[in-house]
Amino acid sequence: MRSLVNKVFVALTTFWMGKYQHIAFGALIACIAALAACWLPQWATVTISVLFTVGCSMGKEVYDECIDWRDLLATMLGGATVWIALLIH
Image 1 (cartoon, rainbow, N blue to C red):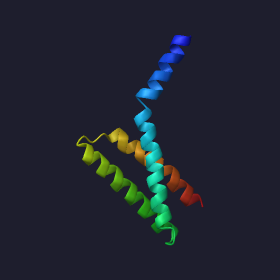
Image 2 (cartoon, rainbow, N blue to C red):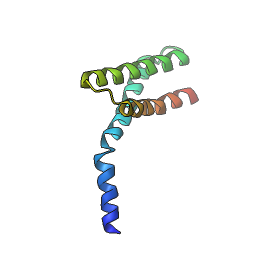
Image 3 (cartoon, one colour):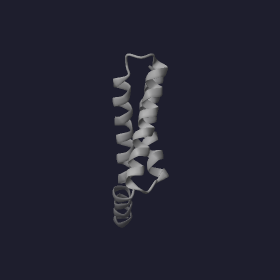
Image 4 (cartoon, rainbow, N blue to C red):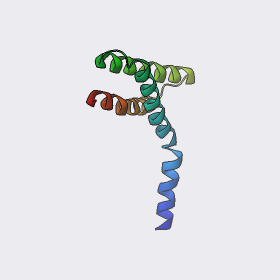
């Protein structure tokens, strides 16, 4: 049983670590963009946050010279947490 737990732990900390970081930075980028545009109407704030997050994540993937769609999806998932909170507010 201990071996199985160790294998799961290693899998979560090695393979998925990059995705966790993408989710966290997606939320951070979306939050910074939303704070910068908070004086605008709600729909404009969310739109600017989405566009800024998409632009930053695409720019990072182009900089890496290898577009990984899973990284983009993870970054958008992190941004979506902020966008949902903005829309609920």
